[in-house]
Image (cartoon, rainbow, N blue to C red; front, side, top):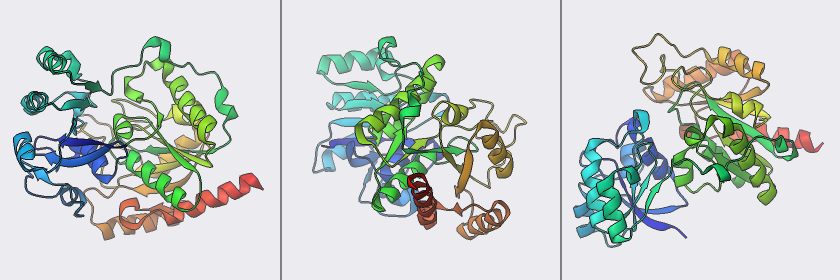
Length: 355
């Protein structure tokens, strides 16, 4: 059963810093979203701010306005931003205090734990409210070390990797999971970030809050547990960052430790340098170069999904057409055109495995 919640973004809703909120707008099985708090976009619909599609998700100027106008009460206040370094923006601190004063528990996906802020923690305790810091590391006794049980998993494992961070790998993973489910297959998504948990994915772990020694084991265990419980035909493993992003390279674990069978690669043709690293001489490699590196690690890339940020749709489609002709694999725009062509690829691979 979903729990009623509001999402606070404090003026960031129309920016890439609100990717947690954007994911929740696109769908969540964990929360029933009653509204968003964002003074810059107040009066609009959150879906329209995201992609022009009305989703009946009102935006309020303040928490007090939400309380006055909403016909339903919320139990949780979710921090909807994902800032560089995972720091809670100063503009949200007063809002968090106001949320607690109005009997709202806090859900926080940032590295900056709300429970470490003494005033907020004391207020929550005094009022008997929860502070859920999603990125708080597991206790040592709950961690899993890699042991090779991944070989027991017979599902088709698809790693959804990208050429940079903040490209929509989680959104694409979710879209692919939903598409394969609609096509009549048992499909599951393995989340590896805080928003995946907030959206209600059942299996996964928080990659960037896990001790390095246990990342491979936690990933393996999440996939293995999913297989034990559900026996899905196919799993989509949400990627993080990219293989060559110097601020936090990731991706090898998906291929080597998770034993991914194939890769879907997410790319934004308009982005030339790694996100928030314009000061550093590191440039995103060509898609073909990234595919070659993935192959060296031991997996084949069977499709490319295009993030169209800062591109016109027709421009992105033309790039997709040219790239598909060059690489001879499907190149699709998931949000604009859907993923039916990739569903066909997965169906053929599943038939080959059975045959």
